[in-house]
Image (cartoon, rainbow, N blue to C red; front, side, top):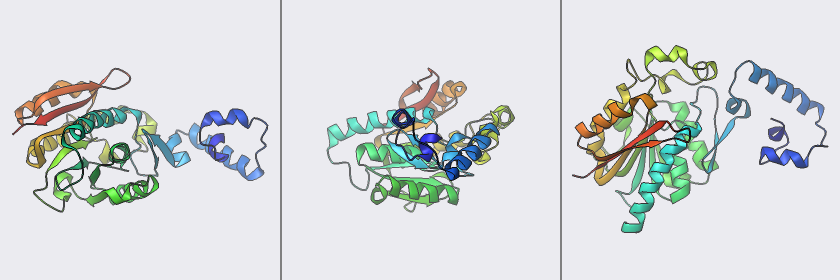
Length: 265
């Protein structure tokens, strides 16, 4: 918090400012921030921003907060895109855009685009989230490569038959029953529609997996963030939809976090 008040780039920079005296206004703001954190408000909302992969993202009330687990989704996407670029050359073109469903504030999509220079499309049902995504695209200087559309998953796309080499999503995957057991700083601040995956947590994931083959180019990848308890069930959904080379990737805590697979037809 002190680093934020002093506009320092890294918290460790405080080591070089140990003798700096805060102005009265800064002290009052610090006391307010500490009070908010003690009450359970997430630090990301107090600061209004979060570092995610190589991007810095603005967040606010009613916006799903990107978390380190989702960086696994970015890693899986990057590995695939870099391999594709090595074999196919220039990534730009009608069938060479990343699609990010349930994009929220744009975290995964913006990180992927910042790292690769690919173009991308993000969709979400929440207009406020899309406004943050557009602002974050400008903030990270990739707005010219991105478009955002409001709507329910694939139905938001302006071209109904558009195909993509990579589709990613961090969809709601918490079961309705488990919502009340979430930590208060998640349950009370993240929007419910970004968390609630239905009775078994797979309601949105089922729809994405079933519809994705229609929107994937041959050899394209679908990569989804999941709850660790869902890896087996989601892998079976992939196989039933005709996706091959299904793989489960773990996050840094060793939990099953991303399921990916290829559309070979």
